[in-house]
Amino acid sequence: MRQEIETQEQQNQNLEQFIQKVRKYAELTELTPYAAHELIKTIYVGAPDKSSGKRRQSIHICYDLIGFISMSELMTQEMA
Image (tube, rainbow, N blue to C red; front, side):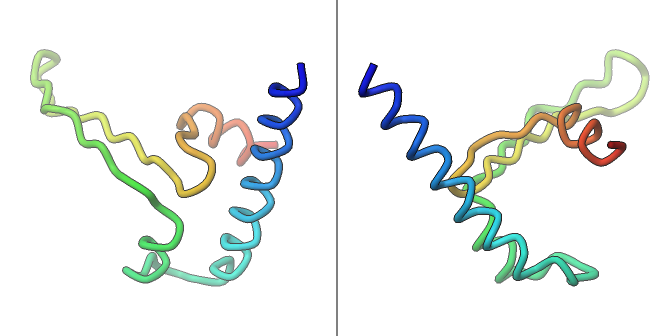
């Protein structure tokens, strides 16, 4: 149980650090290389899929300190 509590506390601390970083860039109108480097850990681009007749590719962004955030979760938060 202590390990779980420590994990949760670390996740909370990481989230707070990430939020502080994001606040520095809140007024940006376009993503700069410096901001991308500071906020994003890795970007995974999937192979193209043309089975529907249109080219589609999956893109997964792993943010620094917090990991992946699903697009559906981001859209839900944006609409709220």
